[in-house]
Structures are given as C-alpha cells and as structure tokens.
Length: 378
Image (cartoon, rainbow, N blue to C red; front, side, top):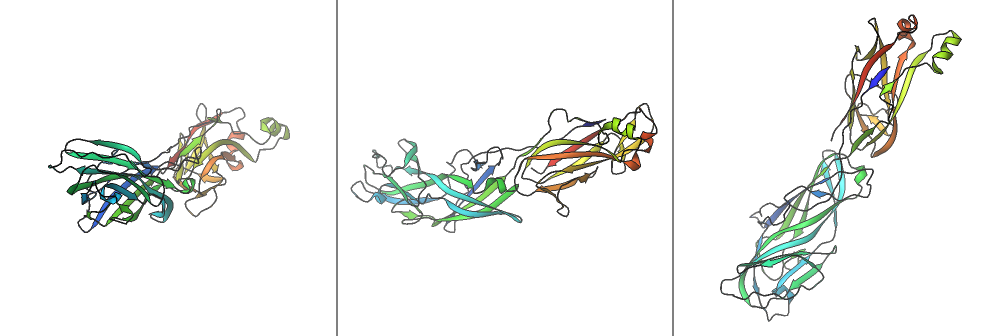
C-alpha cells in the first residue's frame, strides 16, 4: 500500500490601464505599459491584459503644447480638441525565443489646460464628436478632462471655448489603453516586450489641435507578462495505491505461478500551458527511486513510478510523456500549447525480479509513502 501526496502549482486571468515615463528631450515622448494576462482553459474567451502600473493615468511628463484659442473661430482645432487614432494596432512581442501577437489601442486621453491669469471666465460648451466624458473638472487655475474614444482610426472630439486666449499651456497628462491577446491559450509564460510609435502633432495620429508641440512622436514600450494556469486535480480515493497482479491475488494463487508484475494506475486531470517538472519524495528510497518496507521490520523492495500525460513532452529530448519514468531527480516537461483537463495517469509497478522477498512471505504487508511533486514554472 502506498500513500500518494500530489503537490500542485497554480495561476489565474484579467484586463488593463496605463503607466507613463517622462518625455525625452529629443522630440519624442515615451510611455511604458506594464500589463499581465493569466490565460485559463476554463475562460478561453478572456484575452484582455490587466494593467500592472499605477492605477491612475494622471502621471504627467508626457509632453506639452502651447496654443492660441479663439471663441470666434469656426475651426474646432482652435478650441479644446482631440483627434486620436484609436483603432487596434496588431504587433508582435518577444520573450527570448518565444513570441506572442497582441492588439493595442489608445482608449482615452487626458489633458490639463492652465488658465491664463488675465482670463476670469474660461467656460466651455458641450462635448461634440461622439466621445464620452470620463473626467471633467476644473477650478480658477486649470481645466482637467479625459475623453474616451471609440475604436476607430480617426476619432475627433472637441469642446468650444467661450473665450479668446493666447499662450495657453496644455499638458498631455496620459492615456488609458486596451491590450488584447490574439490567441491567449497558445502563449507560454514570460514577459514579452515590444514598442509602438504614434506621430504627435496637427494632422498626425495624436492631434490636439493647432498648437506648438514639444514632441512629435509618442513611443509606447509594452511589457506584457503571461502567467498561465497550472492545475492538477486528483479524484477522491487516489491517495492510496494498492499494487496487485492482473486479475487480483486470487487468480495468482489459483494459477500457482508468480505474477509478472504488480501494478496500480491512478488517474488525474492536468491543465497547463506552461512548462513544469515532476519529482518523487520517498519515505523509503532505493537508488534513484522509491521502495516499500515490510511491516514489523524486514527488507525493502523497489518500485517504479511513471507518468502518462497526453499532449505533454519531455523537456530533455522531446519524448512524449507516455509511461515516462520518474525518480527523485526532477524531470522537466513541456506541453504542446494549452493542455486542458487532460486525462493523465500515474503508474506504480513492481517487477518480477523484485518480488522474490514478497512471494516467500505470504501475508506480509509492504508499505511506503510516495509524494509526487508538481513544480510549475509560473
């Protein structure tokens, strides 16, 4: 009789927002997006990365513009104005030799208008163009707003000013974004990086109206971390493995011949898209594996432990994990893509060459604890 103690590792899944770095002096602003996705075979449609940077987009330092605003102008670009390329951009991110395909878009942009001291009234009219107000507030010194944009190439929105002002200082506070995995269940664990560039200025991808811009580009650096789930589930009753010959002991006693092998297979469920390792911890050891010991003292007999996991391969040589031998030393495995609720098995065996001591002592009981350790690379 053996006691099986499965160990298991885990992970999970989510969405995202923003993080910004100060603008560079060389006519290019920079922003860094840090996000995480935990793909799950139980939620295959969940493909949105979750922001891992600051919760608030109002970071500052993204860039500034200086503009003249005229209440008499019929051109929206002379007022409070945003024309954003807000459609999804597909790009490839890399982590060592692995790559993933993602889609990124700017979903909203926030700005701060500093009010000139000589203007006492800085009122604005209603928002036009189809955007939604996410933030709209101000005081005697400034006006802060955030507009969300639909997923299209040229999303134009504006508010007309009820005043005329020169030398308006405007800060581009930051943005929120969406980052989607194209094929989430095929991605391996790791932090994947890449860059995306937007042109900045009047008539460009990020257009905030007629103004003097401190930067002409926005470079977005993406750091996307993938953490796949790893789940091992053993049904009730699989904490004990009783080794028997085929057909049971009664068939052996009636035949009068020693059995060829004693065995027991235990089924379990495996879900993983990440590499992992397996190893054994033995109450009684025999070489590189485990053994059973006779009750009330006496000798020990070795047993063999192997594993079968459909869709999983050895990290050393790439052999399929089919009755793959396990031992005290860690053995690495890697699934071919996402393995979901795979019907796996542990195989416990004692070969005829090791049965001599058992057969000579009918009625004796040999026992030992075998712990199978699953160590996921999460």
